[in-house]
Length: 431
Image (cartoon, rainbow, N blue to C red; front, top):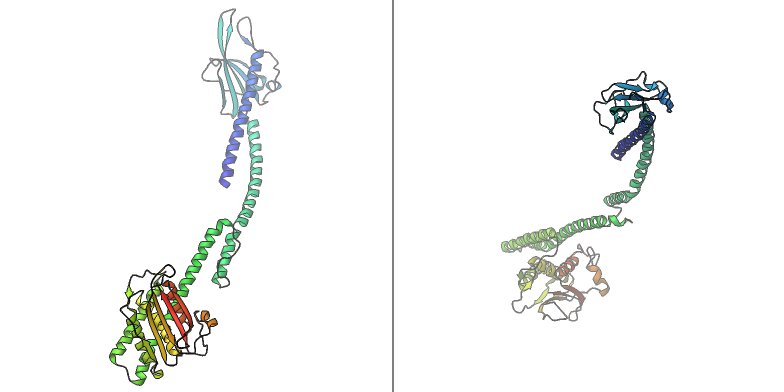
């Protein structure tokens, strides 16, 4: 804005100077024509001017307006009374009918006009140059007055515009300050997202910021859940090792198997924590082998209950999923059944036929003869930190892990009362 005003000031001042000089040139041109109208030649062919000129300034010494007539050879023919003590420099070249307007060294504006007088009586042609000059003081005073007025107006207008710009910026940047304030509130935990009333121009920014905040929170929540899942998954191998140490009834091979299993659990959970979305299922696992390993481990953990595991797999079925996922799903379900059953648990692996109504190809069904879970509590125990019996020992995340994994695999988890044993029946449908 400052550069614009400076440039505008220079341009306007230059335009006014040119306009004032052009006006002065026209005035001097009128004076030239007025002098030519009263000039005469005498009988000898000499140019004669009247003793009194109508323009009063030409008759007053040092009035600021001067007139001089010379021959083309610079010989002085006539000068006005105002130019008695003033030197008006002659024109170096001569051209009839040519007008030259310039500012001389004495800071006067001078108009030179060349003309030829044809005296027919004596067949004479004489060349003259008439010069009319005016002090530049008058023009410079007008320019200075205009410059002062222009600066005052520009300063006033600039001050108003700066104030308006400040107010407009304060108003237009208010939404950004609101966003900054809301971000600080989010950092302090007072808000969960940018939920203010922002203008449409900032909707893309706020949407992306909210998406970023939610993504980071989801990542943090996944890391926390993974740590909880890790501790929960290590519970069974640690219980086996602890039981074997207490009873002195664990072989080195069983100990190596449990340590290997713990390493696999840690590797699996770390990979799941680093994952950013659902992975493509390209590998297959044998569910019979995995469930048999889980049964063997639980038999050692709950050896005092003498649990009867009814599991008679048929064929050599293959399931498209990660081995760690199946360990988590089947392990948590069987561990809960072993914890709450009386003595009997039944596991079934059922191959399903895919049709238009169902896209599931595999069913894992686990039933026990425990006390069961009321149907109105089934949705709650699938949430993290919720247990069917708050007095029991546990983290309350096992069933939440099962529900999350089944959902990621594109399956369905269903729980109800077992028609055969009266306890809980879990059905896991997988594609």
